[in-house]
Length: 616
Ligand code: M6R
Figure 1 (tube, helix red, strand yellow):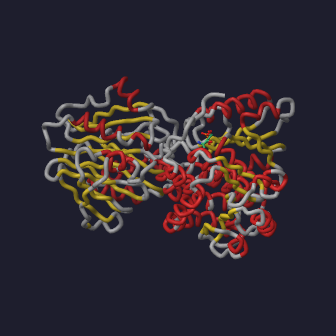
Figure 2 (spheres, rainbow, N blue to C red):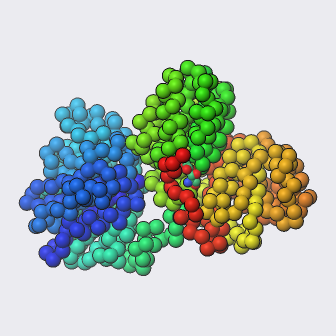
Figure 3 (cartoon, rainbow, N blue to C red):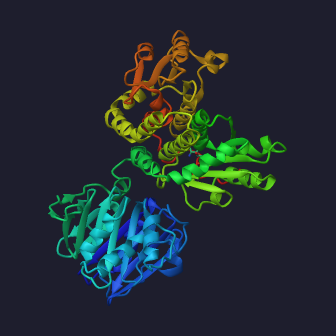
């Protein structure tokens, strides 16, 4: 996820540099690895860019200082996906002639092939990004004699993946061309005067409330105070509805959601779709290293540790080896003197900056020759420096302190590695592999369907439970991870005390707390643990527990025993069951979110917590 902003105007009385800087700053929540601006004046492109947060860059190079007579500029704030967060990888990216500039949000999946083809034709690349192929492809099309717009259209046809792009050309000072496929893009307009493009409405909201929302496979030509839309596939002109935005800037930044936590829960389907694009080659690298390792550890903190618990379960199923989970703060204490050569540590950290995990893997690297396989959401974060191989989860920046979409994408990444292992080992049939992939690719739809239909039910449960201070979240098998993570969410944002525990172990102690009406949330996918879980539900029900269960749509047995059920719209089969830590989680995240609101707490700013824990 990155932010793009552009303006083309005929107004003399505005400071273009200031407008662009303020616009891109309002998109900084979408990424803050680097920022860049390109302004057009006297048939030349003027580029300013650097790595870091916008304010830091501003102090160094004054991004707003662009030529006075400029009437067109593009800007970008980056959340790195391909290439480290360095100056050379900052947008905009230019073609060989320095005439075409592109800012891009999205992921170009076939960029390696395109880059190879372009390099063979003599094009020179300055960055490691996927984006840089775009200006070079447009350059080729223009050299073939196409006009600016058709060159962009034809270049985009060569891309697979997701993009929102804005393009300008030094010889076309009256146009910006923009296009969208699977990444957001909106156009703001002051008719007859100025036109803006942006990844999100808040970027231009102080300037205009009139806007067009672009859909997939659409292209637009922006001129000062005018815009024309085209279907990218047919290249025909299309009409679009001009809308008036009623939101405040604050609400707009959160996409109309009241809090980032809620927005990020609703972003899970798109985040998961992006994670599904992780290259098979990289998954195979992880899979092969795990297959040849003698000892495997998986380590993380907090939510990432819960993802590790779910992931270790999924991977072990196909790996045929035990994986030991260790909280990263305990890794050195537990493994000191025991860490053998040919060990592999899977390290998981959303931020890549949690001090405990950074120190743990630095220690492991020094202590023995072990391999560190890292899964993080932040390209170039500190953890990546001590890692042998890194997978980036592609969830986009997460602003809410409570981890939501990054949890789903971490578990999904581990699940993708697991299926890759199954493929290499050929321990299941090709038909079964296909079924697991179908289940994985079906996850976003399941979550979308759930979020569409169940918010009122969740609010009802919250109202019903509002006075309770203590809860159990119980489960068996893989769902223990779900219970722990669901419990952590409610604990951190709604300040309730939760025991996220194994349903079997709960009768060895915790059950003594149960009285009439004590709320117990059972996580109950229909897997191999289901029948035993039915027994556990009965044990707690017969002691007066108030049973809320999370089940699949077709569930009957546990439904009959429950006071309330939350039903996840997914098939009751083993393929989907294995990924239930992902599909069941939004229900529990929403429960935590609405509980926080019911207790007048700000879910984006839980008490005593910070997004990244950089102290021991
Ligand atoms: O950035 P990390 O994944 O290393 O962070 C680890 C924990 O601090 C984090 O998961 C924390 O538990 C969450 N914010 C909880 O929602």
